[in-house]
Length: 489
Ligand code: DUC
Ligand code: ZN
Ligand code: ZN
Ligand code: ZN
Image 1 (spheres, protein in one colour):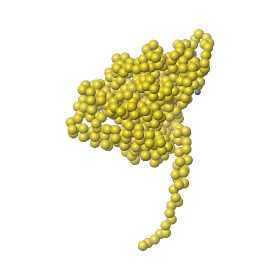
Image 2 (spheres, protein in one colour; image 1 turned 180 degrees about the vertical axis):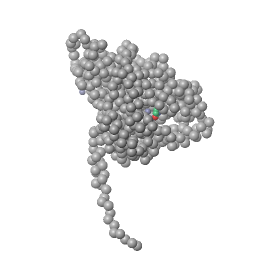
Image 3 (cartoon, protein in one colour; image 1 turned 60 degrees about the horizontal axis):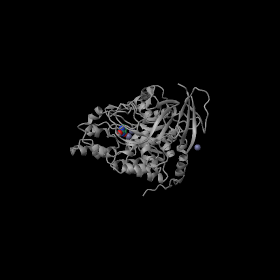
Image 4 (cartoon, helix red, strand yellow; image 1 turned 60 degrees about the vertical axis):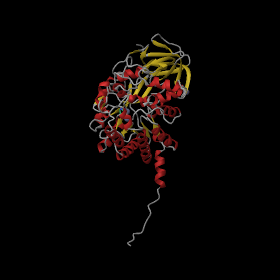
């Protein structure tokens, strides 16, 4: 296959600009973006993009491929997950490394092995689930040697992944000192535990009990607490999977007051509602179980509006695939249903249809929320997230006049369910290019295990610019200690 590509006649869209231009690619890198590039030589594959959008491939900031979780393992690994992603226009993702027996290094090495079959580029966040000197020391190794610049803290999953406020504070401080971004799964785990027991006592053991046991107020509380603790430590915060108005409004308030908080809605929260959890068929209902839960109708529209107005900044999926046989572990007790829904393949289409087709955001904003903002936040822009000379040739061609239809039968995930089954809409990713290789064209996928590369992420300077100044101002504002005479009364 030629390693030279010429994409002709399309509208090239970046997050801040669009133009009619051709794109020329050599050896996986974008070489030129200019009007009317003429073909030189016949070893160049030419793709006609007339009437279509040429955009940076999607970057999914939130996935769980090949993860051990809730006595199961997610069934999409770095091969099938990547196949699904590429077929849906996503060319990179950032997955969460889970430490092994508390060791970050062992966790990193395990994920390094899992990712050997990668078909597209990927990066890593890391979860911090306990605290001691080793963890603190290993965090520095991860940042300085392993290309990880973000750490996630689970405020839910009591008795498993959950951290308390003391650990949250230690972790936030450590992130700040390393120039890494602190992330939270924000739900009050103690209250969720209480809510779950309450449902079981009431005899509500089915998937609807999942939603009833962990209402939006518990997400709002934890989001507010994480935001306040991050402010107390004076470090930026990234809130993953914002599922409710309650959490979104806490983020809005913090941002309005000048605090650096980033909010990530996920596709399920933007387009679904909780009524599925009441579905009479267990298999169907259980497929919608994720945490935080999908909320009641109304939250979806408000989250869309928050994304459109910049209160929330980028869209993830939390792709975390469990088959119906795995979900059936919780047939008698919703607490045992492995949490997670799909989305890595559907995100680009559903965000286009929900946000652009509906007129809520522009095409440039679409590129921002699906790709560029993620690259910027995790410090890999403009290598990723841009159609610019020098950028990696991760490119999609989207036809706004064609349509997509999501179906369990035709999707590329290993799942035997799909929470978006039957959804149709306008806008279709017709071509996906991963570092200069055409991997999706004419509804055909050509993926090769081992072709994806690890994208290391440098610690921040810019996210933390000004924080030192703020700390200094705070310190100098503290009055000198009051000198009191020693008195004995
Ligand atoms: N929520 C899920 O639904 N799955 C994975 C982890 C999480 O927090
Ligand atoms: Zn420009
Ligand atoms: Zn989570
Ligand atoms: Zn997740």
